[in-house]
Length: 333
Length: 262
Ligand SMILES: Cc1cc2nc3c(=O)[nH]c(=O)nc-3n(C[C@H](O)[C@H](O)[C@H](O)COP(=O)(O)OP(=O)(O)OC[C@H]3O[C@@H](n4cnc5c(N)ncnc54)[C@H](O)[C@@H]3O)c2cc1C
Ligand SMILES: Nc1ncnc2c1ncn2[C@@H]1O[C@H](COP(=O)(O)O)[C@@H](O)[C@H]1O
Image (tube, rainbow over the protein chains, first blue to last red):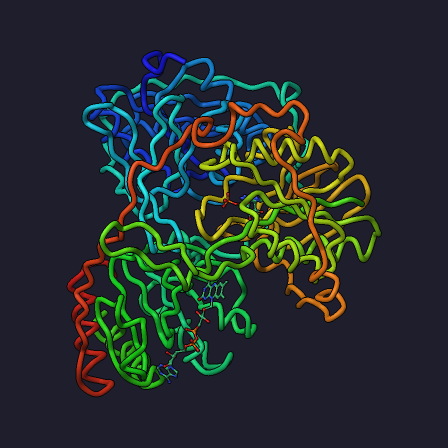
């Protein structure tokens, strides 16, 4: 393989229900920098149906070019047609780098594309750089539950592929005067194999409550005491405009559904503010939240592990502290 | 219904220790466990078998010590275990692992369902499942939190998404990866433990798989390489806020407001 034949940085612009996911904007921010470092173009790939306006939006947020593949068959995410279309595009245009969000969608079908192209792939990166000499992608990611950071390279195969953790990369300001090219192509459904088909989509959470997307997460642990008392966590989340998270202990006790679980066997989150209320800070919990910008812990045990990672800590009874916080937040509004 | 479950032996996260000098992981004498997500995969396979009959086979690629996790699953009720172990596989990345496991599937031949865990908690990549599916041309349902219906020829399952879940239907054979929500794994039974003690898994090397291309695996066949590893630098300000509940809350809320996020 002649790696010099491969040029430009691609990002997969994720959409769900016809709406661009926030990670798509973050990828444009990260991809723009890589493309500029390489002196190459930033290209966004959009798969969907009736999403022409979103393609223009991708330009305004940093893309030089958009390949918009339009088909009713691409409206809902399914691994096989998405992988087929992206794989074929890569074969045709030969990008050097392909990035996608480390989301449920990205982590499901991007590895499939990598395997079909028989190239290397790095999962869930929190750092992306270009090696100044070799001009290759350096994808840095946490492993072993965040205990180790590893920088992964793919020197001899192309494209270099990676998924990127959401909330880590910064989007650019929108600029409607940016110029770019939208290449639109319709895909004939009958040309795609779709065996695993989506037959229903159940939305359980609004975006504001979705912990993967939220800027603020209020997590309650076993220290909250009981299911009824968990209302306090919801109240603080509502007062501050955040989503509700939970430790595994709380999920296992049945106080909160699994979709709220943060940690190694739950979700990895990276909000601007993370509240840990009555959470001890077990290593498996830290694995899912320790890269948050600001961590605020309330715990009655001054020796709790959570204080070792906290930006601000309050030693006290959460049943007293949290209602005061809610009161203060409402006062100042 | 014949089900193949891919399992991996991992270092328990609580035991991850770094050599302060080199920043590399200390592996000597650390406890290894069955990857937690794979326990759910095994449990789900056993439940399907109990309902529909058939056979559950676990497969792991790893060093000889990985027999331990095979024995654990035998104790839970698994029928057969295969260890894939060969010097040629050392240093394999997710592609090379997936290629190898797909060759195992080819050799097993008669299966209707493949189950993997969502991810292995050592590398945390979640890539091996989808890559095996690609190598074998299998349809895939990722992040399965519930199997709603399953027959000899089809499956209907719920895929966990960030904002809820999708329901998918697929013909079999297919590959699914499972999350923790799907079940509560059983403990090993006493009888199972007795059986497991004496159980010797099959061991296959690359030469046992017809058509295996050694150029695809090991350090050389792996497209990705670890460029460097290091201990994450954390810069926590770590400020404790004093005072009674009302004072502490007031100070904290003041700091939050300064951040201009709320
Ligand atoms: C393989 C594996 C995977 C795991 N995955 C996860 C995961 O994904 N996510 C996860 O969270 N855990 C996970 N765990 C579990 C983890 O090890 C801990 O058991 C769990 O995180 C503890 O939850 P907790 O902090 O809510 O409860 P506890 O450890 O019981 O802590 C409760 C805390 O609340 C404090 N407290 C009590 N009362 C009050 C009060 N009135 N006011 C203030 N503070 C109070 C206590 O001092 C204590 O620190 C996993 C474990 C294993 C083995
Ligand atoms: N060496 C291995 N042997 C068998 N199965 C594996 C191996 N590595 C990964 N898997 C399977 O693939 C899943 C995802 O692993 P990973 O991509 O490493 O996060 C795991 O939960 C296992 O089911």
